[in-house]
Image 1 (cartoon, helix red, strand yellow):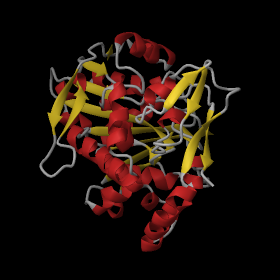
Image 2 (image 1 turned 120 degrees about the vertical axis):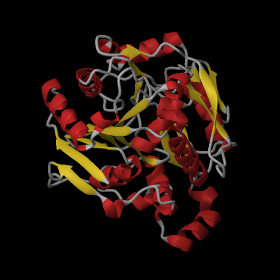
Image 3 (image 1 turned 180 degrees about the vertical axis):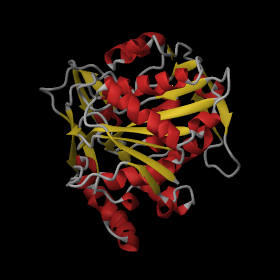
Length: 371
């Protein structure tokens, strides 16, 4: 697997353009292109966050990709994403504006088709079909541009996790509800990835996020752009750059076990791996549920015995809470209510998916252990 890695010290359009052009050359993308094809760029626009917060794909990276495609004669370029809220025009228009994507209208089209269609999956999948946003279904070529982050439920968010954004907004909690266990949820993510099959994945790690990602963490710049066609192996590689163990990330471990990721076949091209990389802080939810990191059968046995004692739950800070109801909207179990303009959490029924923490714009939700 040819893995592109280029050092980009800052969000500078010229430097990003140069790095993206090198990635495209390494990955031989031009050979994939043909006149008149529909190219869809799938960024990470999880919620309305300005570019100063490393929660979403930076628009400069998207612009660089769109400019390169236009230089190669591709003009039908659409940016398509379903964020964490409602998949409707007004909501997505605000997402595009706040995340800086509205500035790209000169080089691509911002998706305005908010329909979706069911797509049957391969034989043997636990999910027999997925409802997927229409631009992804109709694309001839999909470029997945993710932001490298830690994640409260999955541990890491990169190429695989970014494809959860092809599921229409408020249908995502339904999949959390169906698959609350991390093993099953990770399998579901892999089944989405294997259904969508992006042609190229670029990882925006110029500035990345650590701690309570994917939205409430803090900046941890790697000053890197990564690119590969094999995004499963690239996720493994990106996790090592975070100085985390990929085998502790369930979806990546599953990808290795199923022969989707091939970490022993990485052929690095571009710049060398920077020296002095420091470990990313992991989310509070994972720190508290440390049974996930216990080895083999011991970890499974311990998890069964102590799951109720060690399970972590979201907790709201009433002083920070603004009563916006984003947490209640995103909760797959529908156990969060807004009373007196404040969120009220019910522990019974909580599956610890931390969608509420993920979607809270005020960072009013923390993680608390049961004991």
